[in-house]
Image 1 (tube, rainbow, N blue to C red):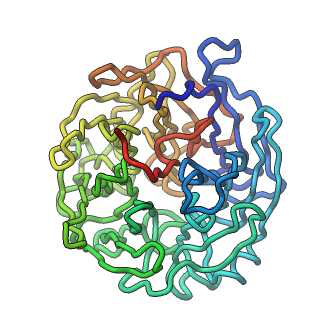
Image 2 (tube, rainbow, N blue to C red; image 1 turned 90 degrees about the vertical axis):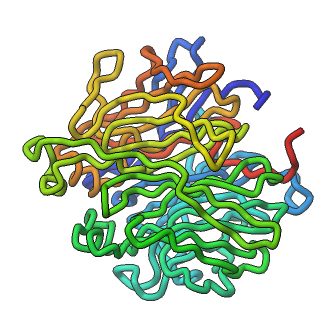
Image 3 (cartoon, rainbow, N blue to C red; image 1 turned 30 degrees about the horizontal axis):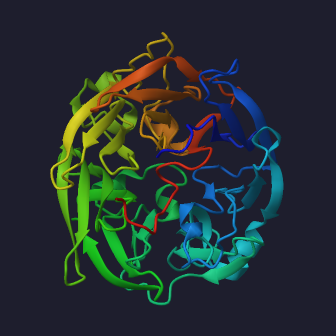
Length: 450
């Protein structure tokens, strides 16, 4: 947290119709720079149809741990999977303004060595780079369940599947861990036919999307417990454990409750006997709306669900940020007491019905989506695209890519920075953000805070 503030951000650009190659944008986030909030370099890929979504570093703070055996790694490479193509790019950003492709792993290698497809979340872990997937084998990704595979953190070769015993786990989304305590937590979205061509309303209303979180013996590579949050709590997505490894709790965001359209935040924790529990600790209500103001998908409900699509926890474990992509809100909760989140700040921007403009007067298409927090906790960045086909369902018509930043008050509160707005090339949408030197959804820690 005491490191120098980030001067650059790395943001994924995706072509929703696959007409252009996807890319990585290097964004100037240094307020003293003449190119502040502008793209200063781009790495455009040689293929089309990848659909960039999430990405991560080859090494993070945990690489310094003697547990890793890789104490001389540097945070140099970004691992960028194509969620639609199953192709993986390794980009060298040692000189960020000259970033270039280092290696390309073709989908055939992913399929052959893992039996998985649709690579999604990247974390630097004890034995290498961990990659979660959203699909199993076969053309539609339903030949067996998805899971996690491991890549070598120096050669970037695919080593193989992670799981020895997956227990009840048959869908996948996010994962993270407590390294010294030797456990991992994973979550669920859906199988590829449930998301690739858009949300399937029949599956949502019959509660067929993921609604469980899974706990693993990290080094034993086996599922030790599964907690079902209730089938009405559809799409348990982001997993955010406390950064301080002494604290044995974390958070999970649930997109929607099918009984009342609420979004929710769940706190999970480990008991002294090693078992885990989870409890709903915050709810976010839907907003009433006229049918004519809603996309076809929502007309029958006459309401806008918040659609909790991303959450992020500040490095000091104090503030949890919650993206409400449907209602157009970025919420800030004080989670000093993780069992009692208290709303501390809010920014309204975009939204299906509200369509709140940015303070600079510009339209913010879609709603707040992928969120990233600076290490010092003073700046919160976010973009606006969820997933190309879902964008088109909930926000018909192209709304344009955007990346914004809000400043955090000393005791909480959020204020949008009027002078920070990133323009992206025409035809692209913007997704996940990584910050130079690390950020709050990248780094794992092995040593306690004082």
